[in-house]
Length: 273
Image (cartoon, rainbow, N blue to C red; front, side, top):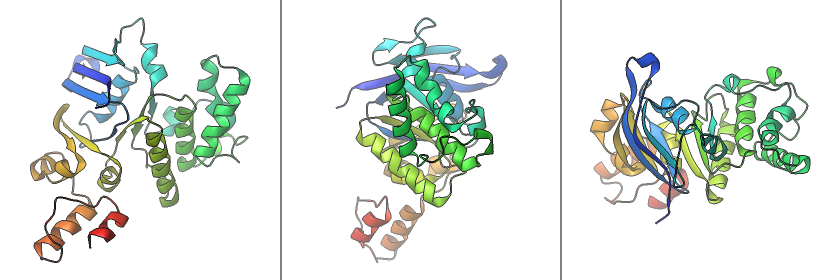
């Protein structure tokens, strides 16, 4: 069993001291996990990520990363080890050019210039941005800005990645490229959590699915188990992934034998039929 990397203990948070957005959330995340966080708008997903990254401080509860309890004095540990890619790139981009934007975080780590540039060009290659280094960030399309913010995180070489709606504004080609990047990061032992409304993407990618409802966790299990739980799907306004729906229909009609193996992508589905 892989070690627990990040723990949330009884985390609660409310904006302006009013309605609670997170309610006593307990969560253990192990190294190398691939997790999808699902839920309707306002369920608490984005707030959870901003707590995990240290952008905001919970009203109550504890955050423990790699065995170390986070306090005001060592909060920078979260910033170093947990990267957060915002849903809206304009909330994250601050530099005038692509090169200076992607360099910014690594330069703040006080790394030698040679090492900074090595990281930057590796991150740009990851996100197919090699020809973009002198482009001004305000002239980029929404999808291009999204790729730049993902490169921003890659250059920091964190232990944990948090992606808030990562496929937003990406065309199908770059959505596929993003999935390949996420898979590559996972193979390197990185822990990845993504918040998304795209159930097909979540089903393909995630080993574990956590569903939030009004600031609380109502499901935490394998993707197959969660997406077969009609009560959870109904409460959280989610649908079953298309591949799962098709497999159930074929089994009901006797065109596919009953089995406990569920295809998570087209290649696996072809093997089943």
